[in-house]
Every structure is written in C-alpha cells, then in structure tokens.
Image (cartoon, rainbow, N blue to C red; front, top):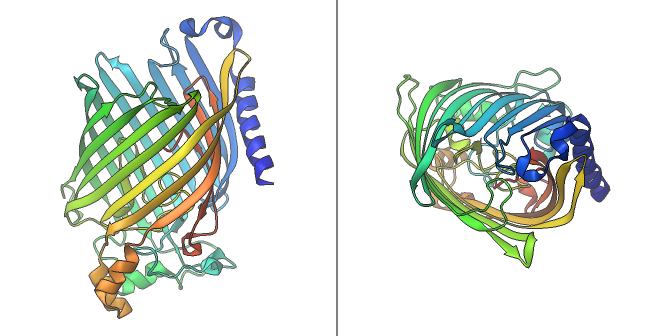
Length: 423
C-alpha cells in the first residue's frame, strides 16, 4: 500500500506540473536556450506531525540561457492542514539582482493551534500516543504562531569559499492550547508553566532580531540536485536582547555534506554531518528548536533532520546529527519538453542532544538525580526509511519520505511530503 501511495504521489507531481506549465516555443528549445519555467503544483498530501494538507505551490525560474542554473527563482506556497495549522511563505533567490552577490530572502507565517510540545530532552518525558491529539486529548500541544522574515547576502571570498550574512526578524506567539474538542486543562505545557520549566518572560513568546555570519566551502556540481562534490558550512548566530524580551542567544552551527557518484551520476551516495551548540546567552525554550543553517528549519526531529522522530521531540542546548542516503535515479525522460527524473531514496538518520537544556530544573521537578537524567537525555535516536523524488528541470524537486524510529518513544512512523532534498 505504501509503495502504491508513493508511486501515485510522484506521478501526480509530474502530471500536474506538466499540465500547468506553458510550453510553446520555449519547450522546443534545447536546454542551453531554455529561458523560463513555471511549475504550479496543486498540493494535497500528508505530514504525520500536522495531518493532511490542501494547498498550492508555485516555482518560477528565469534561466537566461544558464539552464539548469537559474538567474532568478521565486517560490510561493500555501498549505492548510487538517489539524488546523496554516503555512504561507514567499522565497526569492538570485545571483544577479545585485551583480556579484547572491541575494536570498523569505517571509513566512505558520499558525499551529496544535503545536508539538514534548518538553525538553526527549526520553525523560514519556510519550503516550493516546494522549497526542486523540479522543479530545492534546497533552503534548500548545498554540504557536510564528512570523519570520529574513534576507541573506552571499559572495565569493576565495575560490570555492563564500561568505554569507543574514538578518532575520522573528515574532513568536505562544499560548496554552485553546482548540475546540480538546481538553486545555491537561497539557504538558501547562505543567511546565506551573513548575517554572517555562519561564514567565517566555511563556507568551516574543520578538527577536538575529544576525548570522557564515562561511561556506562548496565544490558541488549542482546546488539542489548534486551528483558530486562537498559543501562545508560554519554559521555564527547572534541575537542580543535589543527588543527587551529578556532572552538572548549566541549559537554556532557547523556542517558537512558530501555527494559521491557510484558508477555514474544516476546513483549517488549522500551524507550529512552537523553540530549546533548554544555558546552563550539566555535563550527562550522556543529558540532552542531552530536549526540555524542558511535556510532556517525546525529542530531535531521531523521532516528536515531526523526523519521519523516526532517534530520538536528533542530540545537541548547542543545537538549532533547525521543523515545518509542513496539517491537512485530509476527513470530519466522528457515530458512536454521538460527533463524529468524519478528517484528512489533509502536512508538512515541518527541524532542526539549532546548538552541538555535546563536539566537541573527538570531533575528537581522529577525528583531525579541530574547525572542519571542527563545520561537519558543524551541517548542516540536512530531512524531509517525510504523516500522518493520527482525532479523537473533539476530545480523543482518534490519529495516524499517514510521514516521509522528505532524506539517507539520517538513515534511510530513519520510521513513527510516536502520540496527539495533535506540536504
């Protein structure tokens, strides 16, 4: 059943994109003369953390004779989930808006009335699926609204070495769950509030400004769909308390991605190693769930880091995780003038908290020895699974993945439909 679902998903991506893209004379041109591509994608799918969704995705590329690379790219997406979250974002990317400097920007809004809240550290908080948005129980939920806007600049520093700088504004609103049909009096978030594990100055959310400075060494042959090369990143995030919210943070993120062709470019072994640490400040609990790469993602767990682990299941000061996968191109063909790849994608992910967050406070509340608690918090979390991609003209990548955690305390199975590879 899962194989049929994945196959139908990939075919739906290809057919919907091919149907809605105007071809005409542009489609008949050779790749070197391709000028634009427009990929509207009426989107219906499923994410195990948020439920079914209905929405749309638009991917617009201006090639200007550089195909498969683009001069300008605009992505717009709106999703409405069955568990009531709503997501909207607009993203822009170009190396030609400012000559010699790459410009990336994004504005996003994510309203999550049933937002995941599993406390801090993972395993010390027992996970009971019957209490997770089931039969009127939403014990592991709060309400979160997130508005983020950022702009990033990137340029070559030396051969293959690039610098980047990002300025981001975020406005996060947090409250206890207040959603019809669910018992708001019984929640882990309420217990954390009452026991002081969620502090008063962060209980309702807050606004922040963040400056991120980074270096990247990049030898990949293609950014979104590489078949060879590697990419090493180091990013320093600075968020002083300029807006008077009572919380600041200073974080360091370093990562390595490598792509190795096996026999030909049709088969690629890809792996990713990453560490992120809080090196100073007094971060709010919701700031500890952000992964600070060039593109901001949710924390450890969910569809972008350790697939199969419940989103935001792991909250700590420092994280270490790794992904390994095979990207096996099963089909390569043209449809209505478009270059299309269908890819199979077995994978394994692993991650852990390397330094706990507020474990002293947790130990007091739980009446446990802090050293024993820290050993439990820093255990490894392993998942494995299978995915697939439909790739159109190299830059439009629709992915599906099924992730299975080794420990049922991390969830039963994660199902994710996202755009692009996770790394």
